[in-house]
Amino acid sequence: MEKPGGKAGLAKCKTGSGPSVGWRRRSAGDDADDAAAKPVKLSDYRGKVVILDFWAMWCGPCQASMPHTQQVTLRYKDQGVVTLGSCTSDTRAAFEKWVKQNQSKYPDIVWTHDAAGKSPVRVSLKLYGVVGIPKQFIIDRQGKVVATVTGYLEGEAILDAALAKAGISVDPALVAKGAVDLKGRGN
Image (cartoon, rainbow, N blue to C red; front, top):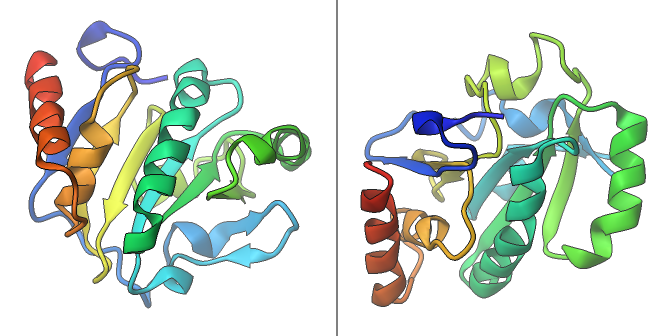
């Protein structure tokens, strides 16, 4: 798991003119299947704001962040926010077992699995450069990465503030809190 600044679970949010994931080009969902083994493509969510959340079952901060990610997804889904929870570095069998046990806790998250597992060709590493998790990419309606969030600490509003950068209407108090949370981390 990534330890920004030497502290496990700290969040970083990078914003600005990020790369376009390109709705037509190969992207995270192109090598992922959902829990029913159906292909999931990022391009299926064109016109939505996507939280692309890379996680693994063995990652404590990933597991700790899931209730918050579920709450944020539920809060903004009427504005077109969808979360793709992309399981990386785990086996398909373990992923299916985890989803079966936990799906009801997180009904608004679309769970996907990267078939490459821990291989160097896994989507999280090959296409997104992810070397530590949890890592969330906020992708706007045009397919552009507008923010990233690394790690998680309970009570922070960093993810909400990142969604505002994608054009989601977020309570100004949450945007301000997200900025304070980032500043408190030295970002």
